[in-house]
Image (tube, rainbow, N blue to C red; front, side, top):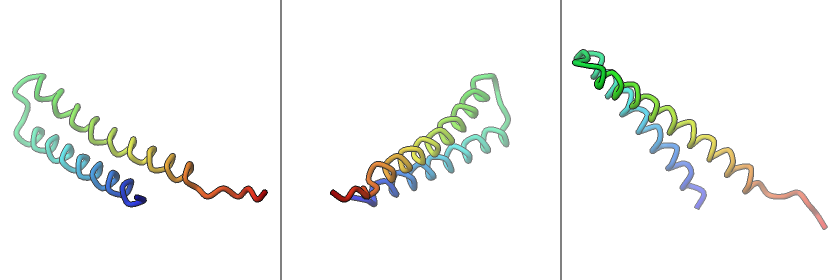
Length: 72
């Protein structure tokens, strides 16, 4: 069960790498119009947003599942 969050982070890194590669490809080929430029920037925003959200979820998960130190 604990490995699920690690898989989410690996998947988000995969999405980030794909978005960077897509954006790089668009920059190499050149932009035909504004739509290509926007798609390239949206790909980067989605990639970085995914990695940031997955790290936040991982930190929250670690905080919530931290063993409590209350001894009754």
